[in-house]
Image 1 (cartoon, one colour):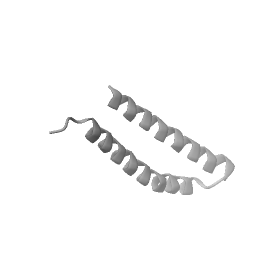
Image 2 (cartoon, one colour):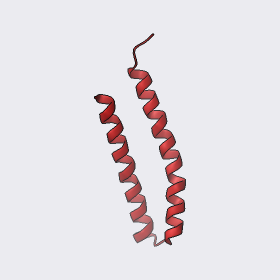
Image 3 (cartoon, helix red, strand yellow):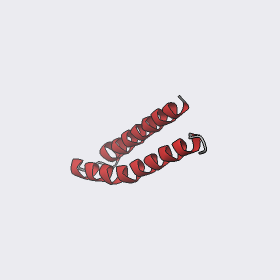
Length: 66
């Protein structure tokens, strides 16, 4: 159950960060939509990669020693 909560809170945090970046780039920086999409895609690659590494690390830490 703890792993599920960690994963859900991680997903929630990623969504929150993406919304903040999209809001900043659209309203404050006033970038065109195609640049926002490109920047979001470039930003999401390392975020998803690090999230995957974190999940694997948590699952490895919680698994019983063989």
